[in-house]
Amino acid sequence: PKRQVSVQEEEQKARVHYNSGNAMSAEGRPEEAITQYQKALYLKPDFAEAYYNLAYIRHQLGQVEKAIPLYQKVVELRPDLSEAHNNLGNAYLHRGELAEAISCYQKALELRPNNAQAYCNLGNGYQIEGRIDQAIFCYEKAVKLKPGNPETYNNMGAALKHCGRLEEAVSCHRKALELEPGNEVAYNNLGSAYKHQGRLPEAIACYRKASHLKRDYAE
Image (cartoon, rainbow, N blue to C red; front, side, top):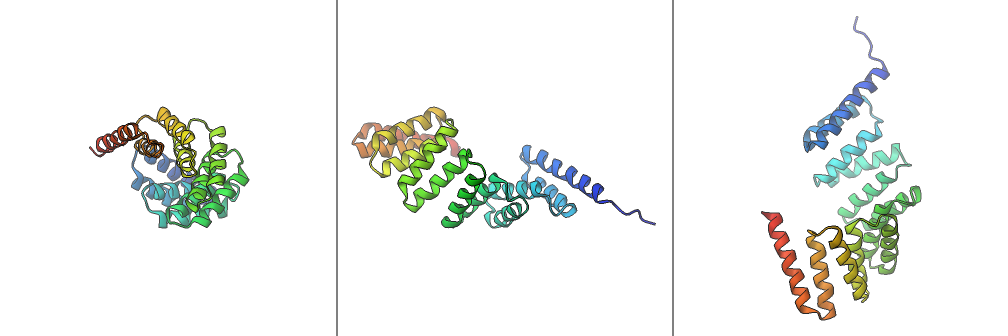
């Protein structure tokens, strides 16, 4: 007679597929990684980590509609996981569902108040919504928690420019470029801040630099 496979054996096999998925993801083979995570979930349907990594890859591939229900499943299985709420927020933001995104970022921060990326993302949500003062507050919190993130400085610079704090905006964009010299968006934003200050030669130089970086990246 056929031997019955124990739950422990199923879980062990699921873990093997999960580890294979992680290895393939690290090697830049996302489609193969997806297959491995799906096999892991077939064997262990409550495998939160496999759902999380599968959702993350789907999102990275631009498959937001597939990523959202997967992140929702992670949050259902592991409601305490701050990163899952944060990433679900990113997926909602990608889909233009701003209120849902903001709610997810707030939940991520409730679970882990030192989550710098969630503060940055919440700032982005507030900035899109036009709540600029709240956006700047969130970016300042993110910078204190993680001073080395160029995205935070860049986005904070955009918010500061929006409310006329141009010198501070320039400082933020310069800081973003100090951290990431090839940041095309930061050069564009710095050019825009200079333009608003009436510093046209510097603005033109920044726009040119951004244009060169874009062309180099495309090649």
